[in-house]
Image 1: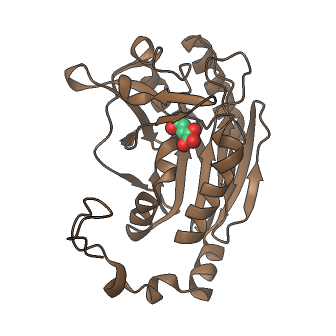
Image 2 (image 1 turned 180 degrees about the horizontal axis):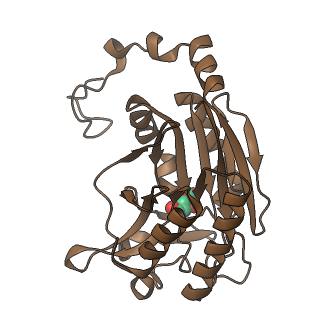
Image 3 (image 1 turned 90 degrees about the vertical axis):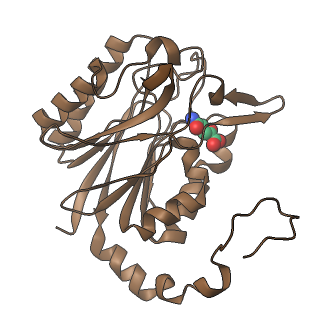
Length: 287
Ligand SMILES: NC(=O)CCC(=O)C(=O)O
């Protein structure tokens, strides 16, 4: 099958986990009825986004309530479900920001713990330190469908071009990032980063945000969107709660890869990194 429909559910997340789960359930059903074969939720869809909330809302994966529901919903609706992310209570009391991925039979296909934690400080605008309470994931995550291989990242992971490039090298044709950019970096970088990842790697990129809730402790930018391998935005939400759909065309992706054959032309002999780079000034840097 060379085409399929992806639904991106831009949920309005509240402080009530029960309400968030009920809302996700209804929207997943709606997306499946609209013909989506893959459905994706936003980052932190069952909890407000913030370091003060993660310990309280955290659950084990895959034995917690949210995982059980995601499994049921994927099975009932016969869709692949990329379960946004939730605060996960992991081993040794550690917490993670984790995305679980479910098959149309309700089986767990994988789980991705956010690899790059969101620690930034832009004076007068936004300061956020996920690492105060979260630990970072240690592996990249792909899953296979009858359509194509898909790579998963969470929000800040989108900024790291190397990760997307590794996914391309592992054969991914679509990257899905549940994410929650904010009112400072959202308008500046959200769209551009996705276009950059798509053009560099000649694949589809889709990012799913929570809806913007002005009174929330962290105000998300919204604007869930999908970009094609040409870098064109093929669907984009506004800031409010909604579902947007992207029809993914793998024949088109193949055409772009043939027309501009980057993989064949890559000069690995010139810029493959042969030794770890310690600092930019270190004399032993070999590129
Ligand atoms: N939740 C996040 O990782 C936010 C990332 C973000 O806003 C950014 O600018 O990067």
